[in-house]
Image (tube, rainbow, N blue to C red; front, side, top):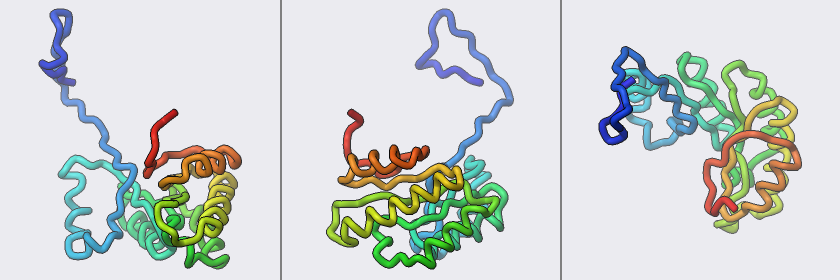
Length: 178
């Protein structure tokens, strides 16, 4: 441990050890097309660059499957599964059943990125509410934390999470804590 000079006081001792912290990235989207050309090179360099483990967070059925495939291939990658509010307009009951199956996967650590996004008009609010509630209910059933996307829908997001007794993280939050 090394105490930085900026926080050193007359009573501070400087300790130096071969101690290394663990850096865990809780929200990555390496399935994004921006990584298409160098995704696997980035993954191979993560340890060297100081990232010990991370969660590849899903936003659709396609990215849920991809996140799980990455997690199966690399021991330091974990996956979430779920459908983002901007993608839930295409969601079907068969997709929901697939998410339920994936939640039992040993490398699936969370359900997300799910939530409500009222910044845009599509998908309709009722559709977003329906799939958000269903996914929160599923997270509770499997005792998985949720990764919430909350944009301009704070009260409803909080009410839904409270209703189902979910735990997790609010990733996109466009308000103030009050």
